[in-house]
Image (cartoon, rainbow over all chains, first blue to last red; front, side, top):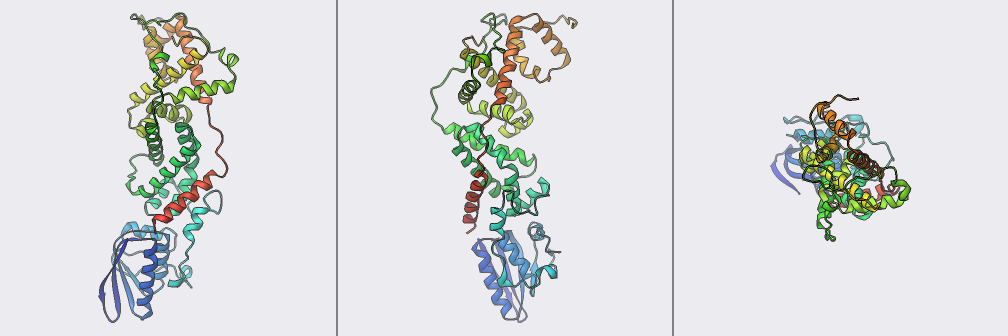
Length: 331
Length: 87
């Protein structure tokens, strides 16, 4: 929402204070008001102190206004960066001086000629289409622009990380439909909560954390299947530390002779489905995604020791499932 | 041939250390003790081999490729949601 508060109206100038977010229908409303003032031949002063966000249409509006007799006051660094994003504005004053864009870029652009479709184009063309100005930016730059509401930066980050997020969700959930829903959920959160990302960890770590948490939340909501006693598939030991069932059979060379590859894969998938959600998440991030234990811990809120303990247990369980499928003891 | 350290561990302790051993994360002294045990323990040799094989097979699992139009489709839905929210 945007509040447009008249501050002063003198013979020579009208001053308006803007409070809130310049986005959506408020851009049009603001443009209409500005056009009315400018049509009277008076100067317009916009106090930007309390503007917290602007979408691309808002940015385009302010750029076009800078070609008129308009003064932008007290632009925050945040808003200033947003407007500088496209390389059009040279300066956005935070001290009250007049802001002017580059004349050649703005020549011919009138208040009524704000390009309406920039956002649409940037978002549609996300997959290998038109070259985005964000394409060569570092991740840090992209995140900063995303935090300023730049949808092109969002598009680029989406394009860069879509496959990884989708695969991660698919491996955790096992169904394409749910994985797709998680991807949507994650990227919506990325867009809406970008301002909460403080950069204490890498953006990818944050992204994986969102993905894993969204998937885990679904896994935990699922109706629990018949509980399986995991311990039945883990190795057992005697009091003196020896294997309980001896001899332990080495079936490592027999596995692919006894089971067709597809059969063996199906068996493993089923076994993975039986793991506790958190154990499954650790296994997926480690053995499918190749993430180091430290990053897995950051994504799941676990210590490295806890990650290793869960990973080891999951692997022992899968080993036990394979052993039993071949007619041996998990030992 | 490795030198004996005099220290011994059990099969249960060897099993607990395997997660670090298979990726070379054990310190040299512990690695030596573990390997001395495994060399003389057919049960642990078998267990180690089957443990490694299980990991190898798990790592071969992958879901099928991502459908070609999926990225565009998800993106279109996101666009709809994001532009809808800004209204």
